[in-house]
Length: 121
Image 1 (cartoon, rainbow, N blue to C red):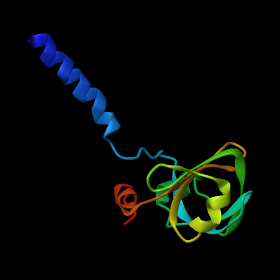
Image 2: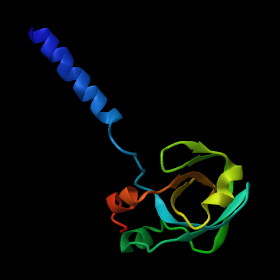
Image 3: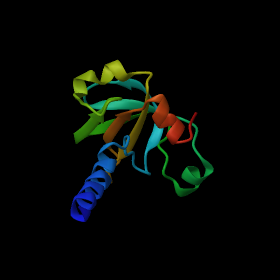
């Protein structure tokens, strides 16, 4: 009986992470896409915190950035999108990360819950 209870407890702990929401990186830059095509986007960053400005981790607004060759684009439900679908994301709140060369390598379309969790709403 104790082993069954232990196994059940372990299974519940393991599935807890599967039921969790989206995991967004700490280096996420929040803003919106102002223009897009399949090879580059113009990203308008939202208000930056003083810590981001101090650390130099922000992306300047209104600049066109190229997309990394293996860019991952995730919609509100964590489904992958193709680069051809980027023009449909213009004006939506997104979070982006950049690689060491300055190209955008990951894009998340953010929901209201994501923005609240990140303290942006």
